[in-house]
Length: 109
Image (cartoon, rainbow, N blue to C red):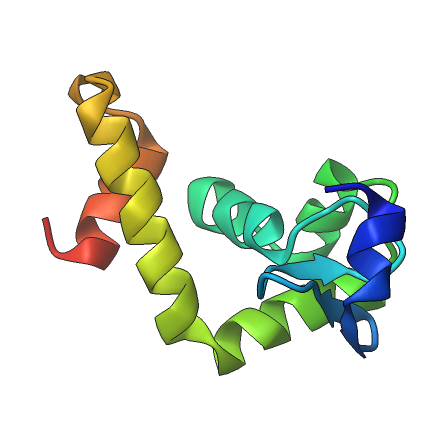
């Protein structure tokens, strides 16, 4: 979906916006909130660490993404579960990365 099309149907909660299909984005960017969340889950770290990994974002945008996740954690867990199942179907689950271990803990697997 193009950014222009996404904005036409977006509900903006500065600096997070929700597109027409319910996906949370950092307003004015092509970065999904779940990308920041998954990065935080995979690598941990502080807000400053996330800023380093997402240099195009401002610290308040990253904090807003984490706050949004905190407020909508159940919805994100459904999406994370869906992605985990997709990885499992592709046979990638055999790898034992720190991120996969954290996901298994989070999902109780």
